[in-house]
Image 1 (spheres, rainbow, N blue to C red):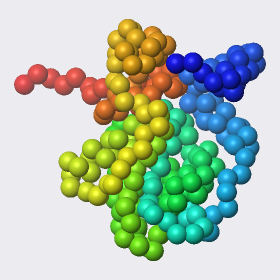
Image 2 (cartoon, rainbow, N blue to C red):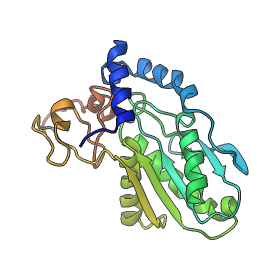
Image 3 (cartoon, rainbow, N blue to C red):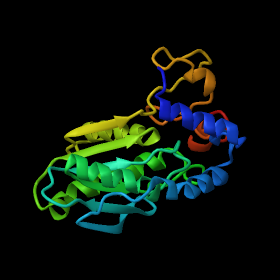
Image 4 (spheres, rainbow, N blue to C red):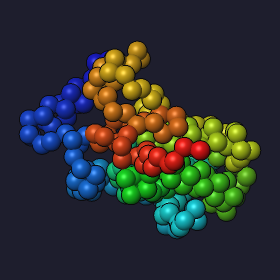
Length: 237
C-alpha cells in the first residue's frame, strides 16, 4: 500500500532526524518520547463535560476519562489506546477521543489499562473488560439514556477491543453493539515470512506478542514484555 504524501514526509523526517526507532527503545524511553509528543497533537474540540475517575479492577483501580460532547449523543464508546501494551496513556488519545465524540455524536470513555512489563498478560485484557462492564452500568448516567455501548481502539487497543467483544459474547456481557478496530494487532505470527495481508510485517517485526488473539509491533521484544513469565519447571509426578 502506498503512503500518502503527508505520511511519507513524516517517515522521511523521522529517518533524517537520526533518532532511534521506537521499537528499539526501552519501555521507559519510549514512554518518555510519547509524553514529549503530546503538545504536537493540539487541543481537541470543547466538550460539554469531562471528568476523570477510577474504575475498580482486580488488584486495584485504573484511571478513566469520560468525555461528553455538546448536543444529543447516540451511544457510549470505550476507546482503548495503542502502544504495544507497553506505552500509551489517556492524555495521548485525548485529542482523538474529543474528535471522535463530536464526529460520532457519542460519549467516550478513555481507560488507562495497566501496561507491561510491570503488568503482564492478561492484566490489560482483564482491565479492559472490567472498564467495559463498568461503562455498561454507567451508560444511562453518562449519556442520559439507554444507549448502545461500542468498544474501539487502535493497534494494541484494537486488539483489546476485539478481545473484550469476544469475552462479552462468551461470558454473557456486557452487551456490545459494535466494535471499531483501527489497524488492530490481530495476527499472532511467529514466522519470519511475510503475513499475506500485511506484506513485510512479519519480516520487520518477527517478535510479535500473542495477546489472545494478537500482538503489536512495538517496542521490540514486546512479546517478552507482555506475555506471562514462564513457569518454573516442577518435579514430574
